[in-house]
Image (cartoon, rainbow over all chains, first blue to last red; front, side, top):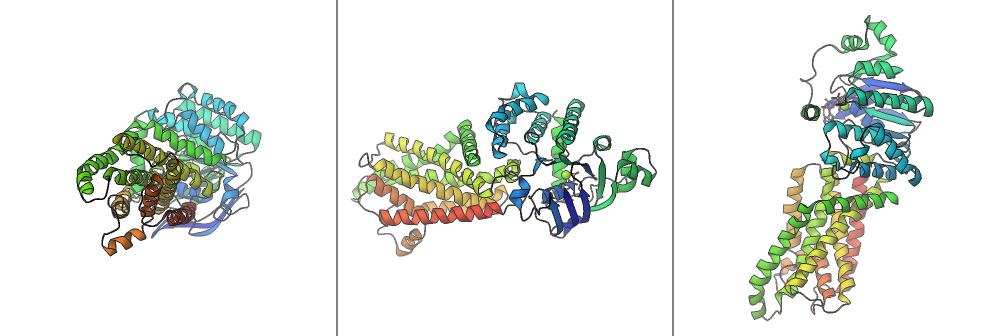
Length: 264
Length: 249
Ligand SMILES: Nc1ncnc2c1ncn2[C@@H]1O[C@H](COP(=O)(O)OP(=O)(O)OP(=O)(O)O)[C@@H](O)[C@H]1O
Ligand SMILES: [Mg+2]
């Protein structure tokens, strides 16, 4: 479903994604893990037509995102790591706008919006402008929106960032249901190792723009002779904090994440 | 097509919910009308040039639309910064449609602003020559609105930070406005200034509005005004659409 070969992305002199290759099969749940600044979001941007690779091949359902943008865009849904709601509109209006952009039939619209707002416990707040929402509520709305239409491939970039355990459970249950019932391929990133361990069939670990290991959770544990995925992750990526290499953008993002987290 | 509509509505909603923006953007035209209209009125009359308010009003209406349209186009920078742009850029809708929806929305908002200023001018004593002036003037207002929203969108597609906005305002939009004949008649000004006005699309918009409202003298002629505005608007829509479709995040 997704095929990446020798993919490279450079920002000026800095190489954010450095010659990575991997494949994700149809109907698979694939976790892409790595420390801050490893290149996960950059990779997702290249898979979702937002960014052109410096070099290498990318295929999404057999199509090149940098050429067949439109065809590729019809095939995926995405929950971004960074905010992407219109703060001036209400929760309901944000979802409605999404439905129209994604051509959800008019009849199904109301029902789906109601269902997803209900699932993420925002139905009561549907007519409030998003700017009045807490960080976690905004996050929940982003996720609800990402699940409004049923794509072939679902990209989830740290979807559980700043969410309470209840919502995290709802989210993963829903994602697994989509995966089982509709054979949706899922490409996710997260910093919660136990989540990845629970939902992903295969895992790739990226560090400094390079893939350092990939396989099932069991493979990774065996290779590193560790008990948990978290230990395996630390064994593969070391235990230094990635501040020294993180650019200012990244630091800003971390600040905003702390702030978002702190307000909840 | 629905995508164009929903993006259009989105901008109208944002506008109607921001009272600060509605009121704030009327301050400047009001100031121009009062300070210049009443301040220069007597001199203008003594010079035998007629009623200054009658001359100035189309210029101030045009100014309102110009500033508001460029601002609407540049709102793209905000959408990029606050992230909403991503949502529209990955949607299965041709980017040209997204650009058109945004442009229609921005143009409508600036047209509404312009109409509010028309009402203010009317209260101040401005009069159109006849009832038939209104649809004709409206066409010119709409063209100014679309043209400069597309222009703002094109600029915001290549520049990505807020500082750039100030730069564009001060070095592009302000000169376009002041060197257009919006505030003073162009006949009799130095040749250089006339040439500058002749390559300034906004000057054709103001001139067209004046003709529509019944001014006896026209700088370029109404047909020429319409042709130039139409052509530049199409050009800017094309360029804006192209640059918009090339945005990477
Ligand atoms: N627009 C940009 N210009 C320059 N450098 C960038 C840009 N976007 C990202 N980077 C850099 O590329 C690297 C990878 O960033 P990316 O956002 O892909 O990391 P990530 O794996 O998603 O990290 P996180 O877990 O913090 O989300 C980082 O070092 C970052 O500073
Ligand atoms: Mg990221």
